[in-house]
Length: 96
Image (cartoon, rainbow, N blue to C red):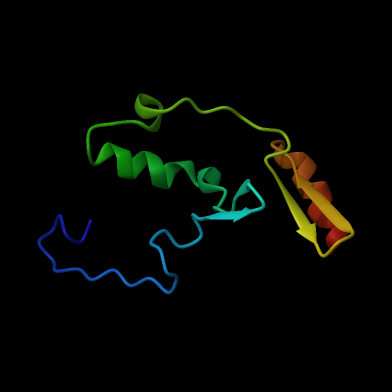
């Protein structure tokens, strides 16, 4: 967006590859998506695509997943984040 306004930009990356959290971990022939759960803020992506006259669904099919994602705490605790917001409120209340 800054470049579009005529600003000079330098992108810095701490990793050996570009993409930040959007990465893949590979071991013993298996690949694991280490990327962010990118669609947590759909309005941000919709606004970005709109800058180019597009909508996200013009380029890919979105499917709601349930659970949306899974969080691992060490070797024993696993927490599923549901696609239902009310279920997540209950889950987060349990943590508090």
